[in-house]
Image (tube, rainbow, N blue to C red):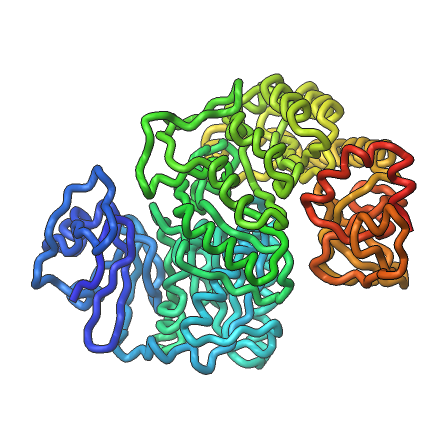
Length: 627
């Protein structure tokens, strides 16, 4: 019986107590006819309570259709499958390009509902904050399926690597980790099921599953985590030493209904994914190929999650997306207007009709709890319209730290990268933001040695850095990624030694500028720090947290005033201890590039600290606010 079916959704078929899942594509009907030789099974039906896309013609599913068993032994859908130890992955020439040789075996014997009862899962996470957030989602799905989480590799029966594929170095690190784990297992250690998840799984499925010994037992892309229990059941059943994979990208998966598990127990700062995918197709970037098209979570699901985090004592939320500020919730419909870009910026795709914008999302999230910090990453410079910038002065809990990835300071290189702006447009945006938002700080990403980059191009990047004066920078030498436009059409012609030298020049200039700016503007300044944990450094115990500009602050462990007013009046009768989760006003006594050493003064709130920031510009006020 078909339980659910809709374009780009997973639908379930049931037979007895066993559940099977396969992915439904927008070409499913034609594919079923061409590949399987059967009539269309799941053209489209309207699920209860959900609206289908307007472009979809509704049809009725036949009451009596084929089941999974009718075609599972012969042909299989693209990007989803099982391979036996003797069955190699192979290409098939059809609308659905990737299949496998061999067959699933007797899947009706897989104890799907009871699979995770005795299994312990260990997860290692690599890459960006989005992967950290995805690990929370993965753990929630597995816990709900009966698995137990562990932080000890040797205790686990299942080992999962949530991977990154943005740069070659990240992939090499994971290959080495897989090799080491396989060697350890071959030396007589207990057998563990090994899974590769995330972007690297999406990119390198065949390579991970082929070879002897096989390095991975399951390979799962970032849109297929719901299938993890099923895929683990397939592998753990032990039939034909099977390996399972699902790397199908989705048009609408956002995991909006999953409440992530935070296994680290920090309880202070939380990631909330608001959108997935990227439509920008920068020529160097593999993300659109590993994460798929942009799709946004419904705003209500985001607000519900943020409210739960606030109720549970979290003090900071970081909104995440591959291109987070292109968020556009159209679940309740679209307007006649189009999304506005930053002045002087363009996009490779046709302007999209506006739903609930990122600015409106930020507004609503900030209103959930005025004493909860709000950050977001990673944005694109084109998506900073005026309505978003206005919010920084309206909501004190929206952190005045903006990640503004530039990649290069050369307009000619930016054009080759297909970034949609020039150096001049980027600098104009930076200057406008500085004028509009007092005390704002910037961080950025830089790629050196991109295809055709000359010394003049490199100098343009250094010049831009001197003008913007970033407080943080993430710098990389260009590494070619397969399937990207640059890999197919441009020449990676900058020698490795020149890339290395240019990278060091960028790093050194950044550190020089950041150190000078920190000494000039941060020495003796007041910061509001969200306290996260204790840390010992050079034999001394500190409280550690982050300031609004995202710099790590080391706070001397001493008793402090309970509020700002006590600090101003020097009321010492009611001093309190610093606690995890406190907002603490501190004075910077040792500035630096990446960390600040500080003396604590008093507890405060975000709202109260914003009110005193204007007064804090005078030395007299700062001297009064000290222990």
